[in-house]
Picture 1: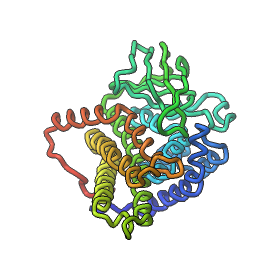
Picture 2 (picture 1 turned 90 degrees about the vertical axis):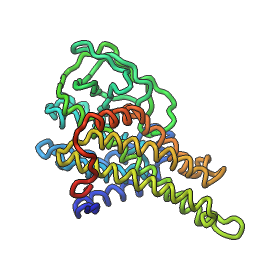
Picture 3 (picture 1 turned 90 degrees about the horizontal axis):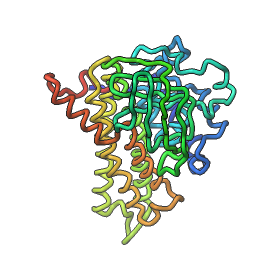
Length: 363
């Protein structure tokens, strides 16, 4: 097994890391308070091309795969997961087009308004029916999604079963406070008898869309968990009690070890599933399992990071409370833990093939 990315992927990940730590992280509290990203940050993100990694080359993209996206998202998530979502104009909404043989240009507006507003409000969201909140009636769509990490969008891609519909009207956003990912916004999404501008039907492709969407979120969770582990570890090494750093006391040392083990295990599952997607192998069960494992790991790492800091952990002066909130919020997307476990179990039970991990290496 070779888990080391090649030089090109390392360079891309390093670029994302520098962008996150130098631009996103210093502004994370400001972005969270304003519930949006400033134009300067958005322009810098567009210039380095991290939003078009998976776009085909004939659509002015980099033509890279899921592994590249996973590596980049971990670095951006470690800086500010909410900002990472807000900056990615299409995000997982791109996947129905890539996997269900849709027209890549159907995601862009036919007029120039997308360019005119600088992309600030020009987001396209992917909504799934894994929670049973969306109903299809021929080419009409209705539904109520209690929370989406967005203030508004000009297009919605709805994935239900083996169908995906692109909506350009018939939906509205009602702002809510939200607990995490506030830099991306927080709203209740209401879809009322919206007409599908484009309807794609592909059972196999729809499964891969769900897999890629889950990995998109899971990789952001890896970044959030890594940041929580790193910050709480550094704090435990510097903070002293009873004559030595608190991290040298057995209880906290064991806790930090458990946190790091959970993070490393979740990362391996995410990279394995991404590797499968890039090679066209069956990936739905692997991606669902990886997402579920990330959610489970975040339930340990987020609160534990806060606990290590004690009362300081709940103060906005330290980032661990934000890590805990954002880990929880990311774990609610695309059906959350229950839907992921249910799909993984169904696919494992339906398969006659032996369970395999990392054929030829995860990356």
